[in-house]
Amino acid sequence: MNQILNALQKNSETHPPVWLMRQAGRYLPEYRILRQKIPTFMDLCFHEDYATEITLQPLRRFELDAAILFSDILVIPHVLGQKVHFIEKQGPVLDPLDAHTFFEKAKDINLEESLSVPLKILSNIRKSLPSTKAVIGFAGSPWTIATYMLEQGKSTNFTKIKMLMETESPLFTQTMAVLEEAIGTFLIAQVNAGADVIQIFDSWAKVVPKAYQATWIVAPIRRLIARIRSRHPDTPIIYYGRGVCALYPQIIKGFSHITFGVDEDVPLSVMKDQIQKLAPVQGNLSPQVLREGGERMKTNVDALLQAFQGTPYVFNLGHGIVPQTPVDHVAQLIDLVKGRVFQK
Image (cartoon, rainbow, N blue to C red; front, top):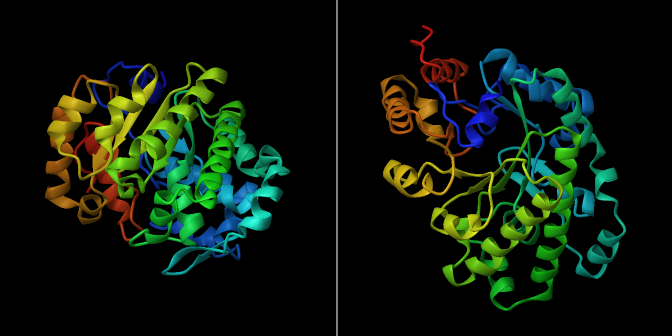
C-alpha cells in the first residue's frame, strides 16, 4: 500500500506517512560528495545520473514514504532564458530580465524538451522505487518564481515586484502569464513522467498585500489546478502556501484531491480545526526544532501525532531541512513518526 496516496485520498493510518521538504540536500554527507563533482548547482539539477542518485539518497538512509524530485523551482526561468547562478552563502542570483527579448524568445521554447532531464529523472525514480513509495514532482507558484525573476534573486523587502504589481506593469503581468503557462506544462509533464503527486511551492505568498491576493495568489493557483485536473483528474496536488492558510478555502472551492501544506507558524489548533476540515493536511514541524533535536523535538512531534491520529495527515516540516541539521536527528524523527523509540 502507498501510504502517501492513501493519506491524500482522505484515509488514515496508525502511523502517518512521512517525507521531508529538502530531504535530499546539504545535510547529507553523501550529497556533499556528489556536489563537489559538479561545477554549479544548476548543472547538478540537469545531471541525470547524479540528480537521480541524490533523489534516492535519503530513502536509502531513512524509512521515508516518498521521494521528491531533486531539482529547483528556478529551473523554469533558467530554461526560459533568464540565467540563474547559485552563489555560496548568497543563494540564487538571476541575470537582469530583458523584457525586449525575453518574452519573444520564451514563446519559441519547447518547455518539455528543455526540461527533459528533470522529467527523465522522475521516470528513473519511479522505476527505481516500489509502488509502496510515492514519487513527488513539484514546481514553484507563478508569484514565488516571479519574485526571484524580478528581484534578481532572494529579496528581503520585495520592493520592486510589489511596485510592478501595484502599477500593473506589463513586465509583471507578462512574467506571471508566461510562468503560469510554463508551470502548468511542466507539472502535467511530471505526472506523465511518473510523478504520483505534485506539490506547488508558494514560499513567498505571504508578502502579497491582501488587496492583491485574490488576483495574484488565488486565481493563478486555481487556474493551474483546473489545468492539471483537465489532464489528470485524480492526481493529488499539494499546495504549500507559506503564510496564506486563510486563503485555502478560496483555493479549494470546487476541487477534489487537494492537500494543504502548512508552515511552522500556523498554530496546531488552526491546522486541525480549520484547514483539515477542508482537506488532508501536511506539516508542520519547525526545521529549527529538527535541527535542535532532543526532548523539544520529541514533544513537538508527539503533539502533532496526537492531534492528527486517525485522520488524513502527512507528517512533514513547516519548511525545508536546514543544512546544519544532524543526520541523527532525522533518523530519530522518523523513528518517532513510525512509532519507534529513538535509535540511540
